[in-house]
Amino acid sequence: MSNTKLIIEERAANIGNFMVGRLLPFRQKRMVGPFIFIDHMGPACMNETENMDIAMHPHIGLSTLTFLFEGAIMHRDSLGTEIEITAGAVNWMTAGKGVVHTERTPERLRTSNKMLHGLQIWVALPKEEEQCEASFTHVSAEDIPRWETNGVQFKLMAGEAFGKQSAVPVYSKLYFLEIQSAKAKTVNIGEHLFGESALYILEGSITSAGHTYGPKQLLVAKDSMLCEFEIAANTTVYIFGGDAFPEERFIEWNFVASNKALIEQAKKDWEAGKFLDVPKETVRIPLPPPRRFGG
Image (tube, rainbow, N blue to C red; front, side, top):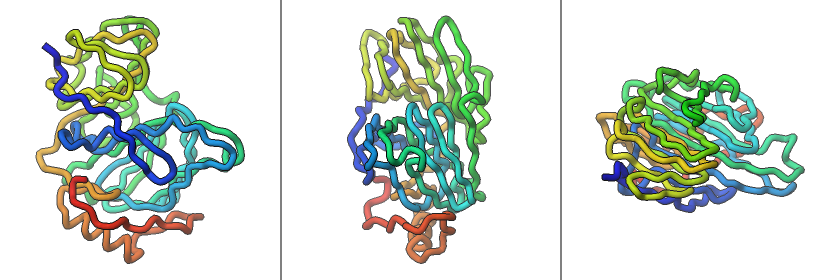
């Protein structure tokens, strides 16, 4: 019997600069563990006149995790952080009670052809940490735990699994793993996982209980302890999940909270200019028109 509870197809979404493939939230599955939002960015091929330019925008109640497969993004935030993220590294920004940031093509790439490809992830904070102070951590590619088991390559970008722990300072029990294999293999990792779990296929395919799944599909497991599958040759998948929160989370625009009042206050504060600006930045993205909670 298949352990797949739900199959989520990547859905096109326009974030202003280019199209992305949205994985979470989904109407039948709003969160997987503490993971509340996942966009697959690209692969986008941009010429010398096309650049990523996401102006100042705020966040509350979450941590953002940026992980690139290819390309580079210059991150600036209201904490004074200015750092370029490149493929294989992790940018982890915790908004807490409020932070503002921008994401742009680095100056060195702005007048040349370039590629951008990666994952943009939001991880909700536990209720007791929703109003914590904002912070930022960059973990370079060489500092991410990696190992090989039975010819299968593993990386742990965030959280804990397999007795290993990432340097990313997470606030709840979670994991975000990359699994790659050059050859067809059987992968059985259920004993190393916990809570809710989902698997995203970037390239290649996997087979579980006689069913084969391909790229741009997100498979949500019925039981993370039963996570076993056949991975095809030249396949890359990402597994993420962890312990779910006891309270519901609301998401509106860039804000996440267990209490709608926190989101309403953040909207008012953004419109009133109460969030700190990002040094060297002048353009602010305006609050979008109202939409229902949970959308």
